[in-house]
Image (cartoon, rainbow, N blue to C red):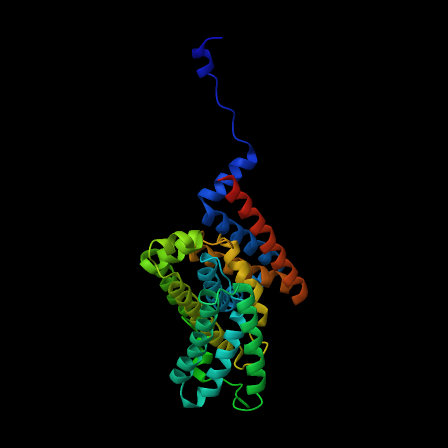
Length: 332
Protein backbone atom coordinates (compact mmCIF):
# COMPACT_ATOMS: atom_id res chain seq x y z
CA UNK A 1 0.00 0.00 0.00
CA UNK A 2 1.36 3.41 -0.96
CA UNK A 3 1.99 6.29 1.42
CA UNK A 4 -0.57 8.41 -0.44
CA UNK A 5 -3.32 5.88 0.17
CA UNK A 6 -2.41 5.80 3.85
CA UNK A 7 -2.68 9.56 4.19
CA UNK A 8 -6.12 9.59 2.61
CA UNK A 9 -7.64 7.32 5.23
CA UNK A 10 -10.04 9.31 7.47
CA UNK A 11 -9.24 9.63 11.13
CA UNK A 12 -11.54 7.65 13.45
CA UNK A 13 -14.38 9.69 14.90
CA UNK A 14 -13.98 10.52 18.58
CA UNK A 15 -16.03 8.44 20.98
CA UNK A 16 -19.22 9.89 22.45
CA UNK A 17 -17.65 10.09 25.90
CA UNK A 18 -14.67 12.00 24.52
CA UNK A 19 -16.96 14.40 22.67
CA UNK A 20 -18.94 15.01 25.86
CA UNK A 21 -15.74 15.67 27.83
CA UNK A 22 -14.57 18.12 25.18
CA UNK A 23 -17.96 19.85 25.29
CA UNK A 24 -17.76 20.23 29.06
CA UNK A 25 -14.22 21.56 28.84
CA UNK A 26 -15.07 24.04 26.07
CA UNK A 27 -18.49 25.27 27.23
CA UNK A 28 -18.78 24.65 31.01
CA UNK A 29 -21.16 27.54 31.65
CA UNK A 30 -23.47 26.43 28.84
CA UNK A 31 -23.79 22.99 30.40
CA UNK A 32 -24.60 24.54 33.79
CA UNK A 33 -27.23 26.82 32.26
CA UNK A 34 -28.89 23.81 30.60
CA UNK A 35 -28.88 21.91 33.90
CA UNK A 36 -30.36 24.93 35.68
CA UNK A 37 -33.13 25.28 33.10
CA UNK A 38 -33.99 21.58 33.34
CA UNK A 39 -34.18 21.73 37.14
CA UNK A 40 -36.42 24.81 36.99
CA UNK A 41 -38.80 23.03 34.61
CA UNK A 42 -38.85 19.86 36.72
CA UNK A 43 -39.51 21.86 39.89
CA UNK A 44 -42.25 23.77 38.09
CA UNK A 45 -43.85 20.48 37.04
CA UNK A 46 -43.80 19.28 40.67
CA UNK A 47 -45.18 22.57 42.01
CA UNK A 48 -46.74 24.80 39.30
CA UNK A 49 -46.75 27.84 41.61
CA UNK A 50 -42.96 27.69 41.66
CA UNK A 51 -42.84 29.27 38.20
CA UNK A 52 -44.51 32.39 39.58
CA UNK A 53 -42.70 35.56 40.64
CA UNK A 54 -42.98 34.58 44.32
CA UNK A 55 -41.52 31.13 43.65
CA UNK A 56 -38.51 32.43 41.81
CA UNK A 57 -38.07 35.20 44.41
CA UNK A 58 -37.89 32.64 47.21
CA UNK A 59 -35.18 30.77 45.32
CA UNK A 60 -33.17 33.96 44.87
CA UNK A 61 -33.53 34.77 48.58
CA UNK A 62 -31.84 31.47 49.37
CA UNK A 63 -29.31 31.69 46.54
CA UNK A 64 -27.91 35.10 47.54
CA UNK A 65 -26.34 34.19 50.92
CA UNK A 66 -25.34 30.77 49.57
CA UNK A 67 -23.65 32.39 46.58
CA UNK A 68 -21.70 34.78 48.81
CA UNK A 69 -20.56 31.98 51.13
CA UNK A 70 -19.60 29.96 48.05
CA UNK A 71 -17.53 32.92 46.84
CA UNK A 72 -15.37 32.50 49.94
CA UNK A 73 -14.90 28.80 49.20
CA UNK A 74 -14.10 29.55 45.56
CA UNK A 75 -11.27 31.94 46.43
CA UNK A 76 -9.76 29.50 48.91
CA UNK A 77 -10.19 26.44 46.71
CA UNK A 78 -8.33 28.28 43.94
CA UNK A 79 -5.36 28.45 46.35
CA UNK A 80 -5.74 24.76 47.18
CA UNK A 81 -7.43 25.49 50.51
CA UNK A 82 -10.92 25.43 52.00
CA UNK A 83 -12.78 26.95 54.97
CA UNK A 84 -14.82 24.68 57.21
CA UNK A 85 -15.36 27.55 59.63
CA UNK A 86 -17.16 29.78 57.14
CA UNK A 87 -20.63 29.05 58.52
CA UNK A 88 -19.53 29.72 62.11
CA UNK A 89 -17.93 32.97 60.93
CA UNK A 90 -21.27 33.82 59.32
CA UNK A 91 -23.17 32.93 62.50
CA UNK A 92 -20.78 34.86 64.75
CA UNK A 93 -20.95 37.93 62.52
CA UNK A 94 -24.74 37.77 62.61
CA UNK A 95 -24.71 37.63 66.41
CA UNK A 96 -22.43 40.65 66.68
CA UNK A 97 -24.58 42.53 64.17
CA UNK A 98 -27.67 41.71 66.23
CA UNK A 99 -25.92 42.80 69.42
CA UNK A 100 -24.92 46.14 67.89
CA UNK A 101 -28.21 46.76 66.05
CA UNK A 102 -29.46 49.20 68.74
CA UNK A 103 -26.42 51.36 67.87
CA UNK A 104 -27.47 51.57 64.23
CA UNK A 105 -27.35 49.29 61.20
CA UNK A 106 -24.08 50.75 59.86
CA UNK A 107 -22.16 50.07 63.08
CA UNK A 108 -23.77 46.64 63.36
CA UNK A 109 -22.71 45.66 59.84
CA UNK A 110 -19.18 47.01 60.20
CA UNK A 111 -18.56 45.24 63.52
CA UNK A 112 -20.09 42.06 62.12
CA UNK A 113 -17.61 42.19 59.23
CA UNK A 114 -14.77 42.73 61.72
CA UNK A 115 -15.54 39.26 63.08
CA UNK A 116 -14.93 37.84 59.62
CA UNK A 117 -11.69 39.76 59.17
CA UNK A 118 -10.31 38.58 62.53
CA UNK A 119 -11.37 34.95 62.18
CA UNK A 120 -10.37 34.76 58.51
CA UNK A 121 -6.96 36.31 59.19
CA UNK A 122 -6.40 33.86 62.04
CA UNK A 123 -7.17 31.01 59.64
CA UNK A 124 -4.72 32.50 57.16
CA UNK A 125 -1.94 32.81 59.72
CA UNK A 126 -2.44 29.21 60.80
CA UNK A 127 -2.39 27.91 57.22
CA UNK A 128 0.27 30.19 55.70
CA UNK A 129 2.67 30.86 58.58
CA UNK A 130 2.38 27.80 60.80
CA UNK A 131 1.65 25.46 57.85
CA UNK A 132 -1.41 23.87 59.43
CA UNK A 133 -3.50 21.90 56.95
CA UNK A 134 -6.49 24.06 55.88
CA UNK A 135 -8.97 21.34 56.84
CA UNK A 136 -7.52 21.06 60.34
CA UNK A 137 -7.06 24.81 60.85
CA UNK A 138 -10.55 25.83 59.76
CA UNK A 139 -12.21 22.90 61.53
CA UNK A 140 -10.45 23.96 64.73
CA UNK A 141 -11.50 27.58 64.16
CA UNK A 142 -15.09 26.44 63.74
CA UNK A 143 -14.94 24.68 67.10
CA UNK A 144 -13.33 27.68 68.76
CA UNK A 145 -15.97 30.06 67.42
CA UNK A 146 -18.77 27.71 68.42
CA UNK A 147 -17.42 27.53 71.96
CA UNK A 148 -16.88 31.28 72.23
CA UNK A 149 -20.29 32.27 70.93
CA UNK A 150 -22.04 29.57 72.96
CA UNK A 151 -20.53 31.14 76.09
CA UNK A 152 -21.04 34.72 74.93
CA UNK A 153 -24.74 34.20 74.17
CA UNK A 154 -25.14 33.64 77.89
CA UNK A 155 -23.10 36.70 78.85
CA UNK A 156 -22.05 39.65 76.67
CA UNK A 157 -24.36 38.71 73.77
CA UNK A 158 -27.34 37.70 75.92
CA UNK A 159 -30.62 38.71 74.35
CA UNK A 160 -28.97 39.76 71.07
CA UNK A 161 -31.23 37.84 68.71
CA UNK A 162 -32.99 40.52 66.65
CA UNK A 163 -31.32 42.51 63.90
CA UNK A 164 -31.90 46.11 62.83
CA UNK A 165 -34.77 46.88 60.42
CA UNK A 166 -32.31 47.89 57.68
CA UNK A 167 -30.58 44.49 57.92
CA UNK A 168 -33.98 42.82 57.69
CA UNK A 169 -34.68 44.90 54.60
CA UNK A 170 -31.39 43.80 53.01
CA UNK A 171 -31.94 40.15 53.86
CA UNK A 172 -35.65 39.70 53.19
CA UNK A 173 -36.97 42.88 51.53
CA UNK A 174 -37.68 43.40 47.86
CA UNK A 175 -38.26 46.23 45.42
CA UNK A 176 -39.70 46.69 41.94
CA UNK A 177 -43.15 45.60 43.01
CA UNK A 178 -41.85 43.05 45.55
CA UNK A 179 -40.17 41.12 42.74
CA UNK A 180 -36.40 41.63 43.18
CA UNK A 181 -34.83 40.94 46.59
CA UNK A 182 -32.35 43.48 47.93
CA UNK A 183 -30.08 40.57 48.87
CA UNK A 184 -29.70 39.81 45.16
CA UNK A 185 -28.43 43.35 44.62
CA UNK A 186 -25.87 42.78 47.38
CA UNK A 187 -24.93 39.48 45.73
CA UNK A 188 -24.50 41.18 42.35
CA UNK A 189 -22.19 43.80 43.85
CA UNK A 190 -20.17 41.19 45.74
CA UNK A 191 -20.06 38.88 42.74
CA UNK A 192 -18.86 41.64 40.42
CA UNK A 193 -16.13 42.56 42.90
CA UNK A 194 -14.97 38.95 43.26
CA UNK A 195 -14.91 38.36 39.50
CA UNK A 196 -13.04 41.62 38.95
CA UNK A 197 -10.47 40.80 41.64
CA UNK A 198 -9.86 37.31 40.31
CA UNK A 199 -9.70 38.20 36.63
CA UNK A 200 -8.32 41.71 36.45
CA UNK A 201 -5.88 42.16 39.31
CA UNK A 202 -2.42 40.95 40.18
CA UNK A 203 -3.82 39.55 43.43
CA UNK A 204 -6.21 37.36 41.45
CA UNK A 205 -3.44 36.09 39.19
CA UNK A 206 -1.40 35.20 42.26
CA UNK A 207 -4.36 33.30 43.72
CA UNK A 208 -4.46 31.10 40.59
CA UNK A 209 -0.68 30.77 40.46
CA UNK A 210 -0.42 29.67 44.09
CA UNK A 211 -3.09 27.04 43.57
CA UNK A 212 -1.30 25.78 40.49
CA UNK A 213 2.26 25.73 41.89
CA UNK A 214 3.02 27.63 45.06
CA UNK A 215 6.67 26.55 45.05
CA UNK A 216 7.27 28.22 41.69
CA UNK A 217 5.50 31.36 42.89
CA UNK A 218 7.67 31.43 46.02
CA UNK A 219 10.83 30.99 43.95
CA UNK A 220 9.70 33.91 41.80
CA UNK A 221 10.04 36.13 44.88
CA UNK A 222 6.37 36.38 45.88
CA UNK A 223 5.55 36.29 49.58
CA UNK A 224 3.04 33.47 49.29
CA UNK A 225 2.15 33.60 52.99
CA UNK A 226 0.88 37.17 52.62
CA UNK A 227 -1.34 36.24 49.68
CA UNK A 228 -2.77 33.27 51.55
CA UNK A 229 -3.55 35.37 54.62
CA UNK A 230 -5.28 37.97 52.44
CA UNK A 231 -7.30 35.22 50.75
CA UNK A 232 -8.53 33.83 54.07
CA UNK A 233 -9.26 37.36 55.35
CA UNK A 234 -11.29 38.05 52.19
CA UNK A 235 -13.13 34.77 52.69
CA UNK A 236 -13.92 35.83 56.26
CA UNK A 237 -15.40 39.11 55.03
CA UNK A 238 -17.56 37.23 52.52
CA UNK A 239 -18.67 34.86 55.28
CA UNK A 240 -19.68 37.83 57.42
CA UNK A 241 -21.72 39.38 54.61
CA UNK A 242 -23.46 36.07 53.96
CA UNK A 243 -24.25 35.63 57.65
CA UNK A 244 -25.64 39.15 58.01
CA UNK A 245 -27.91 38.55 55.01
CA UNK A 246 -29.08 35.28 56.55
CA UNK A 247 -29.85 37.07 59.81
CA UNK A 248 -31.80 39.67 57.88
CA UNK A 249 -33.75 36.98 56.04
CA UNK A 250 -34.79 35.19 59.21
CA UNK A 251 -35.07 38.37 61.31
CA UNK A 252 -33.25 36.77 64.23
CA UNK A 253 -30.09 34.78 64.99
CA UNK A 254 -29.19 31.53 66.71
CA UNK A 255 -26.17 29.23 66.79
CA UNK A 256 -27.57 27.10 63.94
CA UNK A 257 -28.19 30.08 61.66
CA UNK A 258 -25.77 29.14 58.86
CA UNK A 259 -24.93 25.55 59.77
CA UNK A 260 -26.85 24.03 56.87
CA UNK A 261 -24.88 26.08 54.32
CA UNK A 262 -21.43 24.55 54.81
CA UNK A 263 -21.72 21.61 52.42
CA UNK A 264 -23.77 23.55 49.83
CA UNK A 265 -21.16 26.35 49.81
CA UNK A 266 -18.50 23.82 48.83
CA UNK A 267 -20.83 22.04 46.43
CA UNK A 268 -21.69 25.28 44.60
CA UNK A 269 -18.00 25.95 43.94
CA UNK A 270 -17.37 22.39 42.79
CA UNK A 271 -20.44 22.40 40.53
CA UNK A 272 -19.20 25.65 39.03
CA UNK A 273 -15.95 23.98 37.97
CA UNK A 274 -13.55 25.12 40.70
CA UNK A 275 -11.02 22.38 41.35
CA UNK A 276 -10.50 21.26 44.92
CA UNK A 277 -6.83 20.87 44.01
CA UNK A 278 -6.44 24.59 43.25
CA UNK A 279 -5.59 26.75 40.26
CA UNK A 280 -8.66 25.99 38.13
CA UNK A 281 -12.12 27.57 38.18
CA UNK A 282 -13.78 30.90 38.74
CA UNK A 283 -16.68 32.61 40.43
CA UNK A 284 -18.92 32.87 37.36
CA UNK A 285 -19.42 29.11 37.46
CA UNK A 286 -19.98 29.22 41.22
CA UNK A 287 -22.88 31.64 40.70
CA UNK A 288 -24.58 29.08 38.47
CA UNK A 289 -23.75 26.38 40.98
CA UNK A 290 -25.45 28.33 43.77
CA UNK A 291 -28.54 28.84 41.61
CA UNK A 292 -28.63 25.15 40.71
CA UNK A 293 -28.43 24.10 44.36
CA UNK A 294 -31.11 26.61 45.37
CA UNK A 295 -33.50 25.29 42.73
CA UNK A 296 -32.63 21.72 43.77
CA UNK A 297 -33.36 22.65 47.39
CA UNK A 298 -36.77 24.00 46.38
CA UNK A 299 -37.51 20.83 44.43
CA UNK A 300 -36.55 18.58 47.36
CA UNK A 301 -38.63 20.74 49.71
CA UNK A 302 -41.68 20.34 47.48
CA UNK A 303 -41.06 16.58 47.56
CA UNK A 304 -41.04 16.72 51.39
CA UNK A 305 -37.43 15.55 51.56
CA UNK A 306 -35.77 16.23 54.90
CA UNK A 307 -32.52 18.07 55.56
CA UNK A 308 -30.65 14.79 56.12
CA UNK A 309 -31.45 13.55 52.63
CA UNK A 310 -30.59 16.95 51.17
CA UNK A 311 -27.15 16.75 52.78
CA UNK A 312 -26.69 13.29 51.27
CA UNK A 313 -27.57 14.70 47.84
CA UNK A 314 -25.10 17.57 48.24
CA UNK A 315 -22.38 15.18 49.39
CA UNK A 316 -22.94 12.87 46.43
CA UNK A 317 -22.79 15.86 44.08
CA UNK A 318 -19.46 17.01 45.54
CA UNK A 319 -17.93 13.52 45.38
CA UNK A 320 -19.19 12.80 41.86
CA UNK A 321 -18.07 16.12 40.41
CA UNK A 322 -14.72 16.07 42.21
CA UNK A 323 -14.09 12.60 40.79
CA UNK A 324 -15.25 13.71 37.34
CA UNK A 325 -13.13 16.86 37.24
CA UNK A 326 -10.12 14.91 38.49
CA UNK A 327 -10.63 12.45 35.66
CA UNK A 328 -10.83 15.25 33.10
CA UNK A 329 -7.67 16.80 34.53
CA UNK A 330 -5.76 13.53 34.19
CA UNK A 331 -6.78 13.23 30.54
CA UNK A 332 -5.68 16.74 29.58
